[in-house]
Length: 200
Image (cartoon, rainbow, N blue to C red; front, top):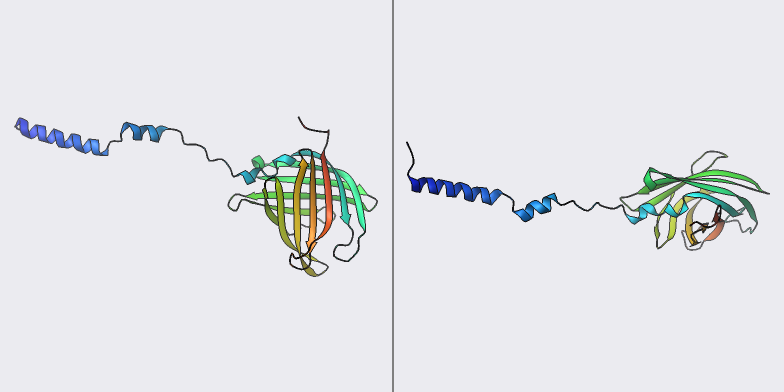
């Protein structure tokens, strides 16, 4: 049996209204289909990008830190820095020598995107043991990293600073503190210049 025209019209109108209520508008469809901007990694992830490659290293090391001695020894050699996992980690291979002997070591730098900080772990290949990490970040081209160590049986603070006067010359400076950071004594200065001269 066929429904009266007025009833059919009412049913059709109600169905159309319901569809319109749930159907997305053209603007909504455009927004849904438009590609969303990719989230770029935080700038801190690229803190060590400047260093990838081979460097000539000139190192001055305080022979007996926090002892009152001012006897420094010097080394020359190379540092090779390799990118790992698109820059989220890297290694620095140090090979230097001087009158005081050789230093062969490797640093592993790891980026934590949650805290936007780097941790630097170092091992001298003489014994293969990792030191406690120093942790920090780069700001305006300067990296500052802090940690805790034990030197001759007493706890100390460690500060490691990286800054580059130019794109082809960088300084790496380590200092120790025996008074929780009130005063610092520099014990390691590495001046690195890019091997092969200035980059293009």
